[in-house]
Length: 310
Image (cartoon, rainbow, N blue to C red; front, side, top):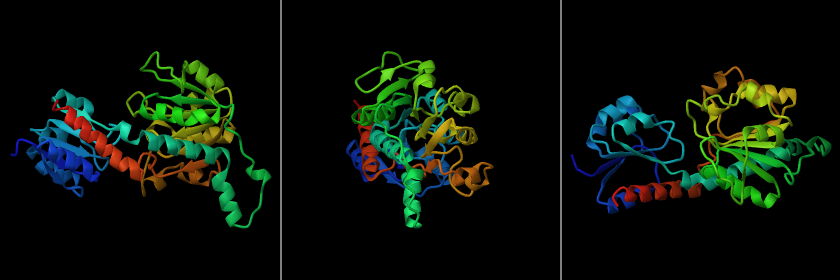
């Protein structure tokens, strides 16, 4: 076994391989590998780079007897058994800095589209319907935007909002003293009391899974717009649809859904209601996946790999 060998088992920008080779690594760039194929050869490698194609779980980690690091080309680590990897002395790297602006811009676009009925209006005009009153929107100015989670993407979203003259309030359970020029730290009591818009920027953990359910949404004092560009399993889709019918949610934008890809998505009981709702905007988990973030993620990962050797 080469003492410095990395496996790229997913589609990464070439810059990661180029920088790794400068550090003396031999890099096998095999983006079409399946989980089972990776399992067979992983023992040869000191490092593995992955996006979301498959889970780096306990069996894979056990087979990787020489593994020193796992590089996740993205922000979330929920497809990696990070706790088990760390217990085996394996360093886990990710790159939330690489796609934070992509996610924030996507959230911004979804919010403006939702509040101004752009998808509905566009579809109607194409079908020769001219309905001004039915497409009257809301202004963002003077609204209170609540951001849940104030890490890389949450803070980037707050920065993007600054020019819209809104009040940005922020709740992050795992931080204190994080108020800055873009967002003001508040309690959840204040979030549910004042929010006009809520946007989620938290990782998927045991604690956050299905966090947003009927009870969570019940406590909001005003009708809200809801944006989720984080992880789909944070939000119970049926609960949001229920709140839309009750008038508690004015509109929802999902870049991520608790069940993704077809045909699994069509098999969900709530799928028909989701796609038929005129108050829901959907995109296919693409917020963090721009032409620019594709490169930036690999650049950030390469820099973190370099720092392992300092």
